[in-house]
Amino acid sequence: MFSKKHFITEDIPDLTGKVAIVTGGNSGIGYTTARELTRKNAHVFIASRSKERGEGAVEKIKKETGKSQVEYLHLDLSNLKNVKKSAENFLSKNLSLHILINNAGIVNSWSLTEDGIQNEFGVNHVGHFLFTMTLLAKIEASAPSRIVIVSSTAHGYTEGIEFDKINQEATQSTWQRYCISKLSNVLFTKSLSKRVEGKEVYVNSVHPGFVDTSIARGFKSGFFVAKVLKCATSSISEMHKILILHRDLHLGNILKEKDVFLSDTGLNGSCIVRGVLPYMAPELLHNQPYTKKADLYSFGIIMAELTTGKPPFEDRLFDHHLAIDICKGLRPKFAKETPECYIALVKRLLDADPTKRPEAEEILMIINSWIKIFHESNENLSKEELIIKNEFDISNELISNLPDEINVSKYREPYISKIINFINLPIPVNLQDHSEGSQV
Image (cartoon, rainbow, N blue to C red; front, side, top):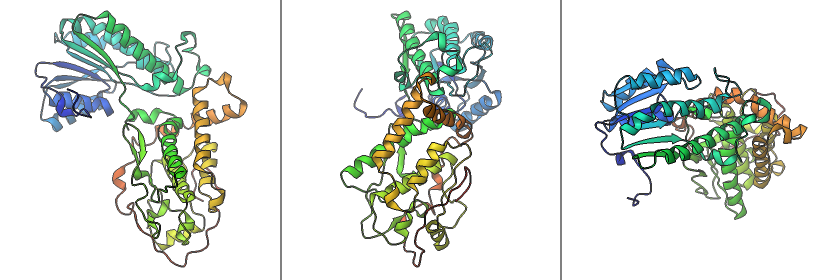
C-alpha cells in the first residue's frame, strides 16, 4: 500500500455506480479531480457559480474522457440561500452521494458576502459548511462514502479565530483572513469526523501543496514572496555559502512542485559564458569572470518578470543589439502597482556594478521582513511597515490580472541557454531611474 512514493491518477479504482460532487470543479485542482473521477466511471457533478464556465468544463471533460456522466450544478457559496437551494436541487434527483469534495476557494481583497459575512470566511468555510450539512443525511445513507475538504498548511499561520474580528476589515490582512478560513476547514473536518464516526463516512482535510491554479491570482504579491522568492533565495544563499554558483539562473530553472527549488545548478563550466541573454549580468557580456553577484542579477530579472507574467524582452531579438542595450542600462519592465519596496530591491540587484548588489543573505532578510509584515495585524505595525503592507495590498489588482501561470512553453528558442560570445560591447553603465511599468 505504501510502496509508491507518489499517488498517481491510475491508482484511483473503478468508480462505476459512485456519485460525486466537486465544488469549484470548473478549473484548477477541482477540474482535474472532476475529470479523473469521471474517467474512472463516477457520475460527477461540477458545482460552481459560473454557469458558462461550469458547463464549459463539463463539455471539455466529456471530450477528454469520452465519458458522458458529468453534469453542472449551480452553486454560489457566497449566497447561503443559493447554497441551500443547490444542495436541495441535487437531493431532488434522488441519487446517492458517495463522494463530496469541497474544493472551491477564494483569496480576495476585502468584501462581504450577500449575507454580510467576510468573503473568504464566508465562501471557504461557511458556504461549504451549509452545503455539506444539507447533504449529510444523503451521504450517510450512501455509505461507505467520504467527504474531502481541501484546506492548506496556511491554517498553521494563525494562532486561532477571533470571531469578533472576522468582519473588521482593518484588523486582518488578506493572507490572515485566508489562513483563518483554512483553519476553519480543518476544525470542521475534525468535528464532522467525530460526528459520523462508526457510520462508514470518512472525512479528511488535505493540503494540495503549492499548485499553479487560478486561486494564486487572488493572492497578494506576498504569496509569491513567501512561496517562490523566499525558497529560491534560500537555495541561492545555501549554494553561495559552500561556494557553488548556479551560472544559468532563469525562471525556467525555478521549479514549483511540492517545494520550490532550483534546477540545472552549476552545470556550466567556469571557462565559458553560457545562459539566456536577458538574465545575464552585463559584466559577463563584457568578458568579466562569473561571480555570485551574477547569480543575483539573474534573480533580479526573475523578480521583475514575476510582476508582469511575461518573459523578459520577448519582443526583442536576442542579438548583439540587445546585448549592447543591456550594457547601456536596459532592464525589464515592472507592472503597474508593483510595490516600491519590491522595485527598490530589484533595482539594487540589477545594478551594473556587481559590488553594489546585495548578498543573498541580505535579500533573504528583506523578504523575511516582508513575510512578517504580511502576518501581522495593522495595529502591531509601524508607520513604515504599514506603508509596505499597503503597497502589497494595492498590488492585488496586479496579481489578479496575471495569467494563471507563466507559460513555460515560452522557454524554447530563444529562452534556451546557449554560449554567449558577443564582442565590442560597451562598458556596462548603471541603470537609469524609471517609473513603474516603464523600461529603463
